[in-house]
Length: 174
Image 1 (cartoon, helix red, strand yellow):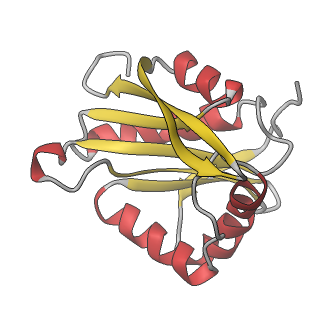
Image 2: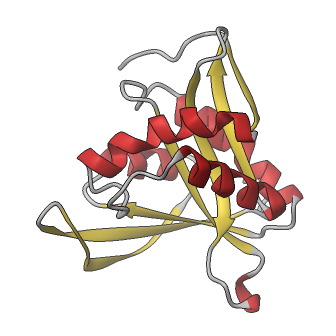
């Protein structure tokens, strides 16, 4: 396991972070089924996503002492119906080589309380399988497995299952 750099900062994302976030995300789109997007978003699209998340939820970035973005995590709309407005879907993406270093935990440890402060009561994670690193991270942070949808996404000429997990943001230890 690689160790996360000792000097790092978690902060709110700004539109100026869009290019770095898009750069981190692009290999997940092009090389994996971790996300079901088929084309990497442009810097402009990523800036719009950051702004949308910041409106009601949150988008945080992790940077090293030199200001290089190492990853990001965000909360966003889970479903559009009003009855779901206190639930949010969360995601974390890390620069290659930083999985299982504590970087994801660092980001989520800042993101989840922020979402609770903004009135969110439940965080939902959706993970394409297989993805042991993401499953392990979410379980370590207290997410509870709630189910698997089988063969719901097709990417790279293969069908993929999706696991769902939830975290009660109102619980004392959330």
